Image (cartoon, rainbow, N blue to C red; front, side, top):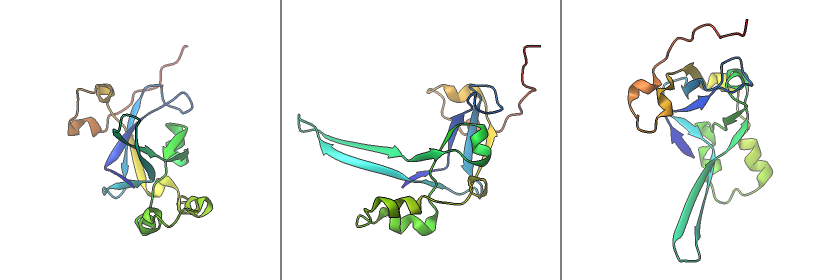
Length: 139
């Protein structure tokens, strides 16, 4: 399980927004998101232990599909125990845990400033909603 208050996603040419427009996606109920993830730990040839984690994604649905083609798998609280149980290793069963309701009932998304592109910036104001102007056209 990967906890998050929210995450940034950049609109792609797939959607109705100009490329490189960042959006902040957060829990609709203003609580924390729980994102399905996997992790691994192994010993490298030099003896160093390497730990890694990955967010599980799926094809984007609903409003999120207008922003990007992929989205994280959100894990409802009532499935945490089953997801985290090391005895549950049947792939098909784990896939059923990842089938959740529409993301529209879980998350909200709004455009934010492109200032989020700077790794040197890390302030709360980066999550503030901005108003988008009319899309530019060639004619």
